[in-house]
Length: 256
Image 1 (cartoon, rainbow, N blue to C red):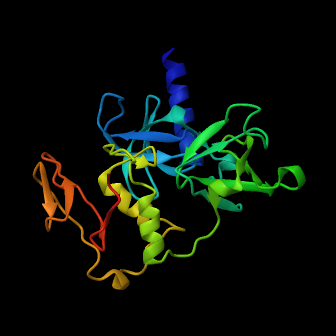
Image 2 (image 1 turned 180 degrees about the vertical axis):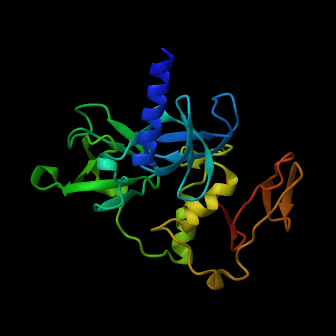
């Protein structure tokens, strides 16, 4: 039995050396401070995200996300890339533009339940555009190699920066999204993550900082609750003084 364990360990290490990246295969995967579900969540990674493996232990992997967060993730919520290639990097891709997009086995929303529902900003590999009766749909390849269909109104291939007005419009769409510690998806955001995700992500970039001069403020907080200039209430974290908000024209606050 000991020899079997040693063999499996060696095999796992060999696999990691051959394919050091994993792709997240569930809508949202938690990342923990330790290799345990009982530890605190430090961040998340959404479907299709490629994460770099730093080390592995007993069904867990310590990973680093493209935005440079590190944490422990269960291996059963990831898959190796097809032929060792990262997901959605070499093929034509689109990005989910809805807060949640349903992926179906056919171009019919009523025939079967969705195969998968993925959050805002999920990248998907496009196989082909629907034609004829399938017009308005895109066939996509999933992380596990399966094919699925998504409505083209739920995704976006445009990577042009947004204007200030478009940025505010994007922020409005997140009003009401729940505050979730460590959250990284439209199912729940951590306060410190809404800025890069709704502002600096590819395809939804804010206008250059110089154009926002005097219109944007970052707040580092350390009390229970207060207001900025008497205009906009902030939720402050008592134990962790780094709760952040973005204010544009002092009128809109993405965080509910």
